[in-house]
Length: 468
Ligand code: HEM
Image (tube, rainbow, N blue to C red; front, side, top):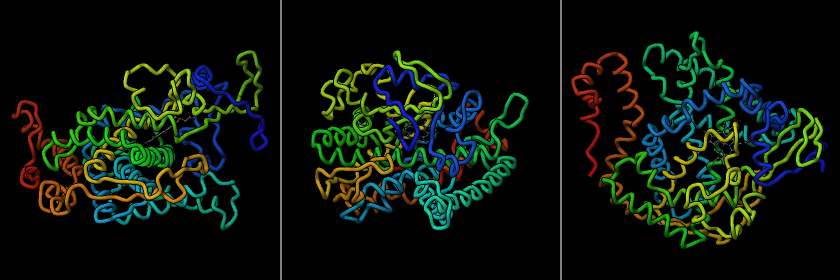
């Protein structure tokens, strides 16, 4: 077949997934619309292959790996609670899909770029929306086209990010920031053996723009679908609510979630996996053929492209029995799904490096949703369409919500203390002050005196209220 004039071979199935995902990058390379390349920059990770790809991917994973992200569960928790307080509390109806997009943007902005709530973040969100409106459009760069606006927004975001990089570099030099404060400081701090930088500033900017796009529609889609599925299916709803309520009961009122709490959210993650199986946000993969190759006796010539569909494998009854049934239990036994069969996050050397980030955000969001609200769809059984590839609900997925914790309790009891504390004294700042103090040697002596445990700073003791 031909797609936009390019001869295309369509592959599907477990063997095809394995072949495409693990194929030598000299034979099959990632294929993205030229609009993405021009908006995200020539050095974004999808443009890279071989050693260059490994270098940039390794740098991104130095922050996105689970061992590092587990330290940021509380920061994500704060951001997500704030979202529900600001955008959901006091309302009867919410448009879930745009709301989950804002939430996802804010979480990424805070953890990856280090921009907290405020005017700067609002500007960035606005520019980011302009980028997204044109990034998948026909790349005609004429005044008033979407693509033109997208390019202009990208140029403005790049200037903001470049300035931010300079600020953060200076802060790192003066020890007023610490290396793993966010993705930018993490990337700036990486060094090769000869002490040269691992990524140039331009590479950092390209990576940031791409990563924001890669993580935004995907994670917010998953969250929106979870809201819809649980509202449509009482048994799924009940099982998630039960799990999340049990976790909430085991915690002091207002206490932040921990990495160990997330490990207990097995049922919720199974529902998420099943949602990703049935409606993967990325539903086709494209690769360009750089060299002739043979697949199952067919010669695929150089210059063609390969299109791979995860949906076809995900809906194969031989791999997922009764595949059209929504059944999270199929993921109960770890390892029961054959390799390269569940490919919502891709596979091989390009498997999504943000999957852990997405998992943490999803679980925390569902935890607060399940414990603070009950919800039902305004239009039960609502369907979706794919534009330009991501599934979307035309009406924004309108839901009716009811608060579970009476307003009074939120205002006067445990969470309120924590919320006030959070607003004035975000966890990140506590973490930052600790690290800064530590790096200046003030804490070192105190730590040693406490047998290696980091003692609380005085201002932490006085400002952090005991949860009730
Ligand atoms: C539910 C959420 C997500 C889904 C379903 C998803 C899916 C995917 C898929 C299928 C790929 C592989 C594309 C290919 O092989 O052509 C990919 C790549 C990528 N994703 Fe995700 N993603 C998600 C969230 C995220 C997040 C939160 C981030 C960043 C924080 C992220 C960053 C990336 C990056 C940088 C790549 C390119 C990797 C490379 O080429 O080596 N993703 N994602």
